[in-house]
Each structure stands twice: as structure tokens, then as C-alpha cells.
Length: 457
Image (cartoon, rainbow, N blue to C red; front, side, top):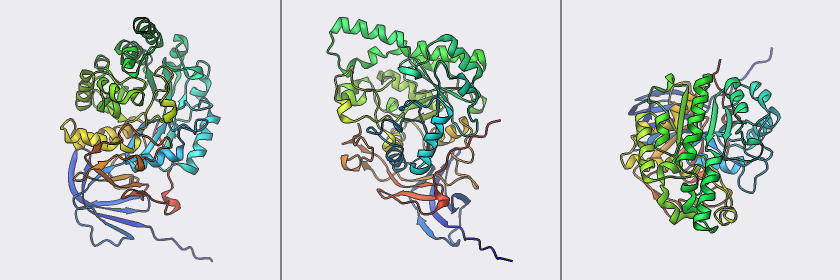
């Protein structure tokens, strides 16, 4: 009889870290065995380890789960790829991502989804899932979507073009009635936007600049669409997640109930928390995004709603374009900006300013996405869970330098700014994949990034 040799697990021991998890901050040690958290306790220094890390003075968070990114592959790889953008995400403390369907060709069926999962299996630096896009005529694909492997169905309710624009009421009703998983919506009303643009062009002429963006894509355009989506979800008892809220008026559509009691949730994005319409004069098309960054009053309302629970989570809506594309005249320049590499650091600036606590930050970037999407064994510092971690030094700062930008597009709106913390290390499935400013190679097969699994009935 042949004997079976069991390879010993790779053990990482993190000592003296300040853990931030589930409403608490406390100093403890953490032992990782391969890709899992094996133990969390106050006194583990005697445990044998292959990698020993003294994290005294550092904070340990569960890695950020970004439920809205555009990594541009397939078909738009001159802007970004799953490899380049997920590497930048890991450098920023994002350990899992959910990627959107507006690529080329758009992700409208199971074959297109399979192709993206195959690319990610070979190239992703973080754990991954992908949205199925909705169209006017792919209801059968939506009904047959894999509930355990696909994060959601993305519906562009206006403000898009081609097959991904769904603005027919009958088609929308079918989607909200029949979709078996969470529906994520981009809510802007195309008719309101078109009317606003025509009026402003007539008033000011054709040479518009980015400063007009929040006037064209205004509160009325957002509310008309988001209120419609919420009404549909209530009518059909859908699981609805409204992406990137930007206005104070829309917040009245959402409640401050515990997340487990909600069928309708909403998120806010990093740039809508950081910037206001005043920043268009400085950043121009680099800040052009859909929905538009709005007023200082809207930004203050978003921050307050994040604290009181009307807004459930924070995402990036990372959407890179080349500098050449962004340099086009305002009306021709594409919307979107790259953010994943510095998102968590930008949010830590809000903590420094007293807008959020550390426990609220972790709740909105890790716990809530894991809960809302029913992600298996991620998003928390718990024994037995996957070791997706980020080790942060709150006593240091990070200067955003052009030479350090990892995006394929090679620019960031934050270049030249100093952020009030530093990402020391990011662990994906127990492996240290980013450390002290450098990406790290995959150490073993057990550390391979994985497709996210969703615990849905």
C-alpha cells in the first residue's frame, strides 16, 4: 500500500495588530494556515510560523470588497485589463471585486460570462465575480443565471447606449419580476439629461466644459430613475441595489434599517464622498463621471446617510480611460475615473476628519458587501474564513506620485495629493500579494485568487 504524504500548511503569524472588525477595535494576534484564518487570540507568539509579522502599531482590516468596477476586458484593453486593474486594487487593500458588463462585446449571456471568468482565473490578483448585463431581449439569460457564481444583474436604466440600455417599461417590469438574483441599477433618466443638455447648449453655446456636468446630469435626472427603480422593486419584491447615489433628494428613498432587514439597498462611491462640483474647475474632464459629482450639500448628505445606515456600502466605480480620451472636448470625453489603488486611503481621510469611525469604514467596505451579496466566508476577521486582509499604518502618510500609479491608463486624479495612512500589506487568500510598495508573486496554488461564491437559496 502506498503511503500518502500530506504537505504541511504554510503558516503566517501576525502579532500585536489592532484588529478592526464587527464594531470592535482590539489588539490581538492572528494565525493563518494556507488561505484561511486559523486562530485569533491575544497570545499566539509561541505558535510556529513560516512568516512572522510584528504588526505592533498597525491596524488589520478585512480586505475591501468592491462591488462596482470596470476593468475593461475584453475588448477595451487599451484602457485597462483584469490583470492591471486588479493589481492596482490589491495595492490599495481591495481583495475582491465585482466587475461590470459594459465591455466589448457586452456581457449579456452565459458564454460571455464564462469567457470573463476564464480571463480572471489566469490573470486576476484578487477574488472576483462578474455581473450579467440586462438588455431588452435577454430575459431568458437572466432567468437562467447561476445564483451561486454570478454576483448580480446590472441594469442601465438610461444613461447608456447600445444593447445595455434598458429604458422600455415592459422590459424593465419583466426583469424586476423574473430576475432570480440581486439587481444592481445605474439610475439616471436619459430624457431628462437630453433636455438639460439642449437647454444649456442653447443658453451657453456649444463650447461646454466639465463644470456643466452636474447641471446636465442633475438631481432631477437621478431621482426620476432611482425612484422608478425603487417603485418597481417594491411592486415585484425584487432584491434591488442602487449603485452610486449622488443626491440628497434620493436618500429619502432608502431606510436606516439593519441590512438583514432590507430588500432595497444603496451604495455611495469614493469620489462622490471626496469631491464636490467645485472640483470640476480644477480637475475638468478627469472628474467627469456618471452620475456626476454634485454639490457640497449633496456630499454632506451622502456622508450623513452613510453614518446613519441609509447608505449601506462604499464602492469605487473604478472606470479608467486614457489621458488622450479624457483630453477630448467635454461632450466627447468619456465618463469615469480610476480609483481602486487609493480608495481605502481616501476613505481613511474621512476617518481622520471625523466623518466616519474605523468600525464604520470596515462595515461599509467589507462586512456590508459580504452580507448584501451573501458572499461565502469573506468580509470578516473570523476563524475559518478566507484570510483576505489589509494591514494599515495610520501613523504614516502616502504621497500619490505619478511613478507609483499602477493603472494601465497611468493617471490618477489624486496625483500630487498626500493621504493620511499607508497600506503596508495586502493578503489575498492568506498570501501576502502586496508589501511595502511592491506587488508580490503568487507563492503557492492554495493562494490563487478565486471566484466569489454566493450563499443563495
